[in-house]
Image (cartoon, rainbow, N blue to C red):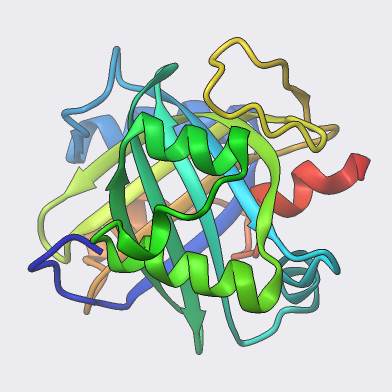
Length: 230
């Protein structure tokens, strides 16, 4: 977490949708929300590198629906590894919390390529120090790359963020994170994912806009889906 950033758990819905739903939601959301200002033509490409233990504890806790769990990942956008975030996502009683810290490309190279972790305790980034501690105590290590396309929308009341994620791809245990050309392949039968996140309340307008027939809230995990091949 960056200095001065306040910890705040948020509500989160996930729905698995299809291409027809995507077209409908894109039209509805464009009428009442704003596009995230960081997008290129309304979308951006995300590359993440997830961490797990030798016994796949993070994966198993997700599959088993453990109520209190966390995961660490590295992330950059639009094929540009010059700006990288280390993120920790925690879930407790159905609420989510995301903490993040900026890492340099050199720090990430040492972590993912050289497997040199000596810089982490002295990095000045509490989140990197926490990851280092859990790498020692739990055996967390980079596991696989996950790529996907995201269309994000924002709505100020309630601090609402709606995202449409698709073209989910897996690195199949590939951890060559800093190489934008590193090969990933489509995750078999991966749906399109609608995610809705908000703070204390979800405005009725947004609640109505994202309602779709025969679509119930789910718990799809891009990381879990990416591990289908091992």
